[in-house]
Structures are given as C-alpha cells and as structure tokens.
Length: 218
Image (cartoon, rainbow, N blue to C red; front, side, top):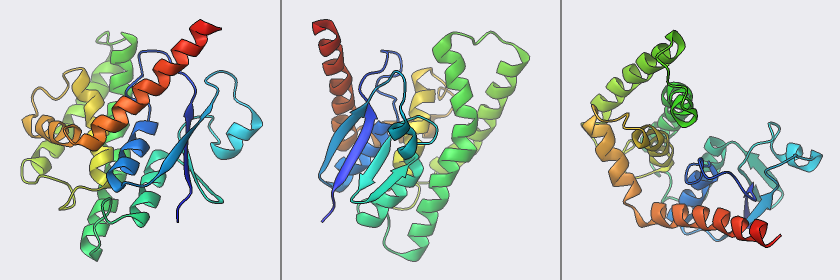
C-alpha cells in the first residue's frame, strides 16, 4: 500500500502556472490511478526543512512512506516501478522508456528551457546567445521529428517517457516553436488530449487559484 504525498509551492505568479513541474507528477499519478495527497511549501523564503527534501529549494518532491524523492525525472521513474501503466513490463520496453526519460531531460530540455525562458521573459532579442539557443533547439527538434514521425509513443505504449517528453515540448509549442515540426506538435496534442493530463492541469491551476483567494482574504 503506497502512502504518497506530492509537495509543491503554495503559490506561484500567473506566468508559470500550468507549467510548474509538479504537473508531471500529478499527471503520472492520475495515469496510474495511485492515491495521493498534495502538500505545500511557501513560494517565498525557503527553510531548512525545504532544502532537506529538495537541495536546490525547488519543487516538486514526492514522499512515499519514509522515502523522499526530488527531481521530476527521478519521481516518475519511481512511480514507473509502482505501475505498469507508466512503464512497459518487458525488458526492452523498460530500457527504451528509461532512455527517453533521460533524452527528454537532457537532450531536449537542455535547449528548450533557456529558449522558453527567453520567450517568457521577453528577452528574445536576436542576440548571439539567443540565436545559439534557437539553433540548438531546432537541431534537437529536427531529430525528434524523425523519431515521432514513425511512432505514436516513445516506448511502444504510453509511459513516463511520454509524460516528460510531451511536457518539455508543450512549453515550446506554447510559443509556436513546433510550427515547422508537425510530428512533434501532433505528439504533444495526443499526449495532452489524455483525460489524465486534463485532470492534472486543472488540479494545478485550481491549487494556485485557491492560493489567490487566500491572499485576497488576508
């Protein structure tokens, strides 16, 4: 019997809502139909207890009994061990899913994160640094387009690899970065059309909306 608690911020500004990485964990938990509760830590100053669970002062982390796990990729791999809905059961499928988890977090998110930060902050000014990141991301997307043109999901069946990869690409798509990569765009659309994503996204938005109400009441 699992005893799962997902910890995220009690509030964040409007801009990152819908993209805070606890959504990846919510999505996986909904996909696996695992019961869980949500706890909060302050978005403001972080105390020693926060850093004990997440050494960079970020979110999310997951507690499973006496285990405390940080980093969304590590959390999803842990959940994959708990549910066949999140990880293929055959050795080849499991290996492929794990490969694509790391590819999402390293090969694709590495250029996608600074690219989207430039977009979020309005600092997409055509400078050499921006152009370098833009070219880097386009190269990665070119390779992902080839991969996704030939398959529905990355490791055969839908898995934690698809949660991570589609979430990375989803932020790029928000700023029309997939306009020249239809296979990538269709992949994101397939993944986010799943009811489990809709539930996870709505729950995150409701969590932060409730925090707004508490702030106004204060």
